[in-house]
Length: 453
Image (cartoon, rainbow, N blue to C red):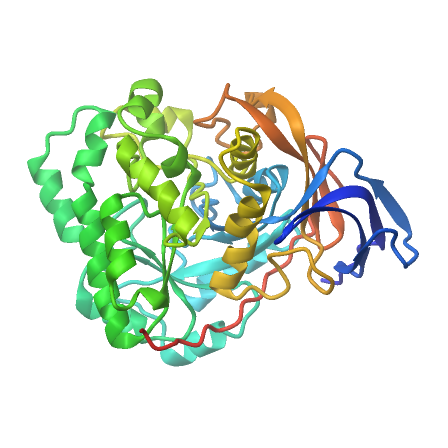
């Protein structure tokens, strides 16, 4: 697909750079940032007045479940990517636990074809690891050269869908295949099975007992032991407990490991979330007590945790109303990550530079995403223009996900994206989509393993 974005000048903006916000104009040519200056030296076909707006690099959400194929009654690539655009997300990485699961080259090609002309933002797709149908080395080598390939996703513990690699022998085989950083859902399946038999589950509050911190800690320990053996870089998703953090801080293989946390685990805590939201708060891995929440914030600030991903996992309200443990796990979030973090900025708890680091720069570094992750000349013009002073409640009318709900519905937030730009194209503005979907496959470089220290 050719990039036909017009040349664009963004005037009177406050631009968030790694060393802090600065008053700058942004010149965009051929979908990339041509210059940052005040005034601009070039001439541009169109102009956007950004007076009163703050420009952040577009969010890169490296963990979403858009449910296509097979589960499109609750989301698909079009609705999910529109929710992304509404939330200032300019690139998403989509997970393989669809129906059927994305475990083959053919299934990956099918997702790329489905995305073409329907996704509002740029995208890449994971292929799921299994114990019985792993990709061949030749297939992996070919995939790692393809635009739109995010890498391999491993479920060490069972979650939504059928993907599972529960044992060390098969996990070792996956770690020895290819070069890209591997994304891992780290919960120990044998412990999950034992807890399922021993813990009586009658209400959502029991979910954190059936998937306890030891299940997470044990999986991370097993994984990092194998990382030390294979020297394969991994990215641990949705870290949720202080026990995991201890392993991440002390294991000899820690320099080969990056890790992610969700807004849910940073901002919700048990038992309050289950008292208030019931099964809407049930996700895998679970929301835990306040001590874990505070430990996650500390780990994010000290670099033990690398970045933030939404783990957008929508289900319908009807499905969530089935009661516990019948209701499926997961909650939507791709549209709300940036507003939630901007609200934290308004409360003085984080800085704009930290938001840009955790949602754009570091995700791009983790997966070596070409041309994305910051606001610099030569990089893709992926931008979120935000009104930091705007206060309003999240209402159902604002929600773009097909599932139609959010755990944050009714919450007043200060700081909202007003304009989302993908490679120089304005795709969302003032709560409405602009034009037609122009998302393209994002390209990642193969990650060369480094020796553990």
